[in-house]
Length: 274
Image (cartoon, rainbow, N blue to C red; front, side, top):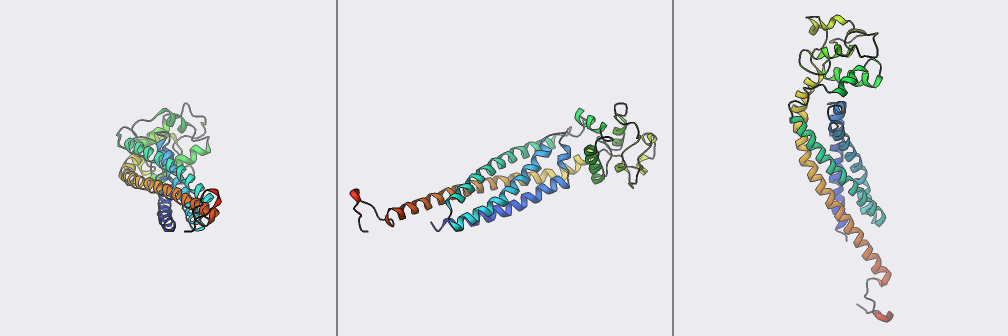
C-alpha cells in the first residue's frame, strides 16, 4: 500500500504544474488576445479560454487535495478527489474538442471577412451601452485598429449604421480609434471623407488585424495545447485509477484489522494461527 503515496504525490505534482500552465495560457488568451471579444463571430472564441481557465483552477485545487488525501490516508478525501478528477476529465475532453473546432475555424479564410448581423447590431449600441463601448475601445486600443473589417477602410464601418443608431449626438469614430487619443479626437463626420484620415486615426479594421495575429500566434499555440491536453487527460485517468486502488487497499487493510490483525477466521469463530 505504501507505493500509492509517492505515485499519487508525483502525479499530483504534475497536475499542479499543469494547472499553472493552463491558468497562464487562459489569461493570455483572454487578456492579451481578447478572444472572448470575438464571441459574435464564433462561440468557441469565448468557450476555449474559459474552459482552459476552469481546468487550471480546478486542477490547482484538486492536486492539493490529492496530495493531502494520499498523505493522511483518508478514504473520504480520496473518493472526493476521484470524483473531482472525473469532473475535470469531462472538462478536458470538452476543451480538446472545442479547441480543435476553434483551430479549424481559424483556418477558414472567410471567417473575418464578413460582417455578420450580430456584430452590426452591436456596433450600433456603442454610443449608448457602456459594455459595448468598453469592449470595442479595448479592441481598438490594444490592436491599434478602427471598425470591424478590411484593411485601410475598416474605420468606415462606424459610418454604416448611423441612420439606425440610437444616439445622434456624436458623429465620427470612437476616440479609441485615434493615433493620439484625447477627448473628442474622433469627432466629426468629415473624417470618413478625409483623404488624410490615416494621419489622425487607425484606419484598419480590427478583424483584419486580429485575423493575422491570431493565425500567427494563437493557431500554433492551440496545436501545442491540444497535444499537451491529451497527455493531461491520460494523467488524470491514471490518477483516478490510482486513487481508486488506494481506497480499495485502505478498505482491505481496515477490514483485516477489524477481523483480527489480518488472520484468517475459521468457521465457527475459531482462528487459525498464522
